Image (tube, rainbow, N blue to C red; front, side):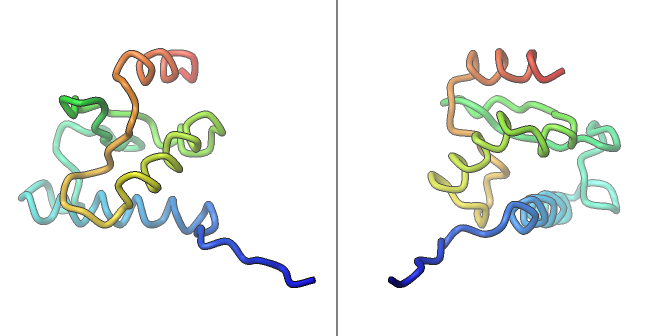
Length: 104
């Protein structure tokens, strides 16, 4: 019996891809030298949520939480991580707000 390999990247590779993507977006848009917008505190990153792409600043610690990883997997499946629009989470804002409030 043959073993099927998944097309999915390992979790650590996906997280590294997110960080690279965030920093390259910052450089293109004229943000501070390290590639992050000036209003994003150290240890946080930006995501866009909902139909209106509302901007949220979330702690990096969320990346290790299984609940947030589900959202990242959905984002990868729907949008991929290689696009100009920033990290977009495909869920309604109310759901995102509810989830992040329980993670804090």
